[in-house]
Amino acid sequence: MSANILRTTVAEIVEKTPVFDIHTHLYDPAFGDMLLWGIDELLTYHYLVSEAFRWMDMPYEKFWAAPKQQQAEWIWNELFIKHSPVSEACRGVVTVLNKLGIAADRRDLPALRRWFAQWKPADYINRCCELANVRKIGMTNSPFDDAERPVWEKGFKRDPRFVAALRIDPLLMDWPNAAKRLHGWGYTVSADFSGQTFAEVRRFLGDWTKKIDAHYCMVSLPPEFAFPAKTDAAQIIEHAIMPHGREHNQAFALMIGVRRAVNPQLQLAGDSIGTADVTAVERLCAAFPGNKFLCTMLARENQHALCIAARKFRTLHVFGCWWFMNVPSIIEEITRMRLELIGLSCTPQHSDCRVLDQLTYKWAHSRPIIAKVLADKYEDLAVGGWHPTREEIQRDVQHLLGGAFEEFLARN
Ligand code: HDL
Ligand code: ZN
Image (cartoon, rainbow, N blue to C red):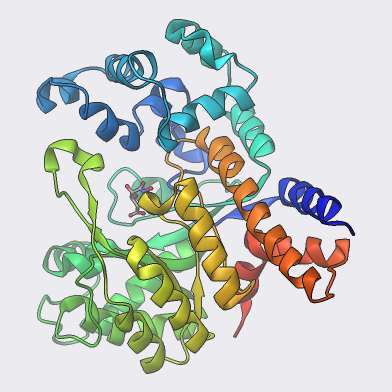
């Protein structure tokens, strides 16, 4: 295969291979309005909120007190009309409109609203999944979310495209209050870990794993996360989450490096970043060889050491260009580093979508980068006389777009 044909073949296969988007904040249609979609949700995505405030003098309170449509109009004017939408999050809105077949640069927000208003949610979900070529969507499901919990407790017919992940941040990051809530739900736990606390935390994890059919358990952790440590988090991981993971053959996803509410006035947009300690991940893998770990880190500075940690532990599966990493320049850098250090045994990307329509742009932006890096690596191989067949390229791409992740979850 010539270099040109190889490159176009890789690009075509990456475009055509359906993806398992392993981490998003989207919801099964049964959750109703919790599944966000449409132009006003796209424009008020917290990534754009923080960018718009860089131009706006208005008091934060005034913005938050305004209706969502007004917030969207302010953001539209600042980031699309008064300045070109060159940031990745703004470009994303333009890509969504383009993929949906709307002339984005009509610059007519009311007309855009009329276009979105014609869709029924069920049809729109199908359209977005088709345009993004997404076969499965990993949700983020928290028993501690008062809007989400009752829907699970009532029960509903699942949409098989939406798979659950058990999100437990309060359990590790705010144990004293989480203990009170677990106690209120009938689990005999004590904040001082006395009595049957760890067994009861395991029962809680087991109950929710079954209730939502959780594909994995997940937590976001601050850059200071350490293991071993005398912290509540370290104790709960050691005495509850690890035995639970072995009992259920369930991977534990560590998302490390977030500093919450650095600017609380930005609400969801107010979180920031910190360089974390990758040795904590290595120590967890070394201490619990019977457990499986997924890991993504928020700081660019941590990415190389995380790849090295994955070289040391086959029980560690690295995934995604998370949040502040999810920009073309860094996606390319991280993906190239991963393929050069751990080959195809990783999951290069997840979308982290909060708004359904974002599926179209997050994958439209990442697929060409993944294809470019993979084609570069095949070209490097070709110099040595190794030429992948079309079937081998299809196999490799299927691995990168969710297949390796599914194999990792199934491994005993
Ligand atoms: O903690 C997380 O899962 C993060 O992805 C946050 O939800 C963050 O606000 C986000 O949406 N990042 O993309
Ligand atoms: Zn997320």
